[in-house]
Amino acid sequence: MATADCLQITREVGFDSLLSAGKPYTTSCPLPFQADSVKTARDVTRSTLRGWGLPELGDDAALVVSELVTNAVRYAMYARGRREIQLLLMRVVPHVLLAVADPSDKIPTPKEPDFISENGRGLYIVETYSQCWGWDPLARGGKAVWALFRTDS
Image (cartoon, rainbow, N blue to C red; front, side, top):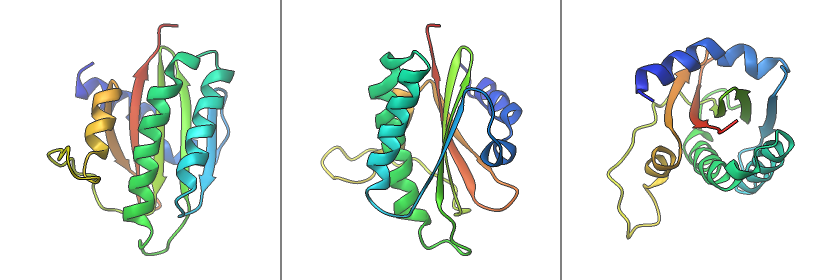
């Protein structure tokens, strides 16, 4: 899928409204700025996908969510007006959209992966395992970094 097509899908979703209201086939989970939020996000992602009958996406989606939440914990915890991180999973047939909202306005920038270092591969992993990824600014400040997965059903 072309990046332009992915951007169109995310613009139609409207992250600000999704983060504040429950919708069918949408799971939202607030997460504190702490390391164990990564495990919580993985668990919520796997159980949500199982509930939607998509367990085959569980491992890849959990890996991507781990990277997105790790980045939010690492880079957004010092943002002004600090709020919690929010995980959003949404089923938009034939896709699953994963998003992590955080209060930082800093734009996510992929780095050239250094396969020896323990840091710097997060967005490379997100790009590798998802169909496409990007970010959208939020009206209240901050951003939602998202990844899109195509499903077989």
